[in-house]
Image (cartoon, one colour):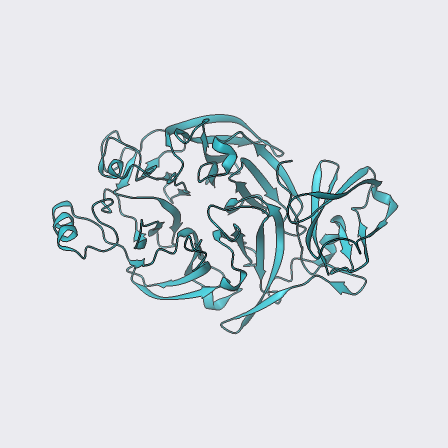
Length: 464
């Protein structure tokens, strides 16, 4: 495996020792944070799957299917990607066919090539219950070292939106003959919808610099978050056929030159913009009663500026006509770039992908779950009997590991925060508890990874 993951599940207690947790008061609702998956490198897309699992992509080229109760995960696809995902390209957006029960297809965007000038592919895969198979490439376009987009969003009519960045060539955004700097619309089979705004063209909107967030509201309104250059990150209302101004306009039309261009080209101005740039990213509407203060509002990930400021989850109150009524900020105290957000439709838990403290993202990263425990009682601690347990946690001189029950060998590996392996052992699952000394280990966070019967279980360990 290329990436090391680690989970902290729901109310994971053993022998009276509970895992560290942090709580927030959100409009009078107590919300608790747990590390669901940690140790991975640049989780990019989070999506709640039709199979009641959390799915995630890594920019390094893997797709994970995560059990939300235990944090155990399966790698269901691993592909080679451009630059192995260390720059802005790699494996990016993901979406599920809207009729997944009858058509179990997963759509992915990824970049390939051996240089910073490669190819971006939109492809669909078939889910066979264990792996993603039978790739079919639906569309190709240029990939670059920067500005590749790419979020995917299915609309109520069954068509698919794909955001495509300008790959650093800003003039492409105004050219209707190029797919770059656009939001594209296609049918699930890759064909062009007959009612697209430009005949025989995938182009749905143009004049976009680098859209990295797409969200659909219950009333059908579409919103996009877009990166500015030196100023004016944008939240936009997405309307077919509209010009969003880039590179001639950045943010609102507020200079003489911009005003002239906007008048001549019917430019759609942003609903709101942010200067300095805060690096807006993945978005999802929160439609759940578990956190009443967020119900009906837009959750927007914020990576923060290059200098390491502004990282947060922004919660935007948006009126029926698209007017932004207010914004609140959460989770900036983690000092981590926030890439994407997803919502559990059953419990109302919010999953947030953190990408480390610096651009463009480096491991070990974390996917956290923010949960209203009082509401999400359906996630039982008994489910964690299938996962590994680590105690005491934090540890000082020694700690014990309980591996998953049942027959079969279990390989347990422990890694420090730099990804260096500090322990490696194999044990039978029925052997119960394994105790290891740690008094000579450096204080910090470690990843405990257990692989058994082709499933991966993980935990964090804090050494004091």
